[in-house]
Structure formats: C-alpha cells, structure tokens
Length: 113
Length: 116
Image (cartoon, rainbow over all chains, first blue to last red):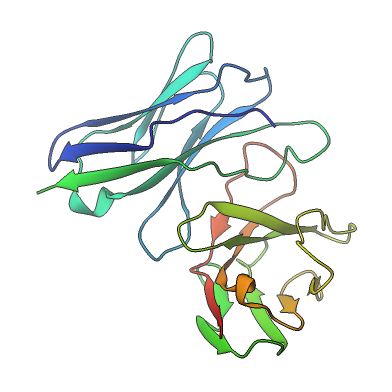
C-alpha cells in the first residue's frame, strides 16, 4: 500500500486557518487522496477527497501539489469542534487491498480557545 | 436510519465468553467493513463484504473471530472465547459501491468491548 507521512501533532487557535500537511511521495496515478478525522470517542468521519485538482466542500479544502507527492488539508476557520485526529489516506484502483482504507497514526490537532 | 448503526454501544464480558456485535449499514450500501481500534492505537482492518462476493477476511486476527452478512444488509461480528487483548472499539463502516477509490466510507460510532 502506498504510504503517507503526517506530523504527529499540530496546534491552532480558534478562528484561525489550519493547514495540515501530508506527504505521499510513492503515490500512483490512480490513487485518490482521502482525508478522514476522528473526534474523541467517535468513529472516523469523512472530510474530503481528491485525485488531481484542488477540492472544496463545506468542511474543508484540499490542495494537491502539481506532482501529487503531497497535499494539504485546509480548515479555513478552526473551531473547538475541529479538535481531532486527522488521517490522510491513499486509496487506489487495482487488485489486492487497495479498496480499503489503511489508517496510519494521523495528526492530532489541538485547537486553543 | 441515516447512518451506520451499531449495537451494543458498550459491552463488558468475562474472559472466555462469546460476544456478538451487530452492524446495520446505511440503506443501499453494498460494501461493509469491520475495523478494530485498541486504546490509543490506530484502526486495524478486519473484514470486508461486497454484495454476494466472498468476503475479504484477511484482517481477522485469529480463528476466534468470524463475521457474516445476511441478506446483503446487517452484519454480525462474533468473537469466541474472548481474551483480554480483544478489548477494543469495533467499528463498522459501509459505502455505496465496492472498490471504487473515490467512494466515501461512512463509519458507525463503534461498539466498545471490554473483556474482564
């Protein structure tokens, strides 16, 4: 499985933007970049995903580097509710186990009031 | 219901007993996943069902673990002769189609299992 690298933890202040980085230098051409987050004592929650172009939805934006070897999840105005572990996951086509989400350790985001 | 439903939400069982955990996926979702998350650890894939295809059981940690999916909907994860190391949150997830990499996977709130 293609792997991702994320910082173990990040800190932000409420109402400020947050940029969560993810490196995926071994990404293949058909791998989608997915972001999930897990709030304390809850199951993971889908945030956003993309393939090549930058993506926006009501929760966040996803900026994908031109060479696709890295991406950044952008929370435009962090709230206390955004404190969670954020997972960057590659999910691709093909055989084997590419269809399932393989979770790493993610980034623990702390939001200060 | 609107989301993936799991029951029980909490279960305390004695070592050696069998337990059954239930998952009710989102209506119309043909793909169903079970994951496990031990305290302070990441999510570990257990098993995957897609329609009438043979399930992918590659993540089941031992033969004490089994799962079935009846009628392409509800799934039950069974742990026989529970051990203390089985204590974890068991998470069920579902998605619309099978292996498409763009499909979103939706998770339930989990069943918290404690083996004493």
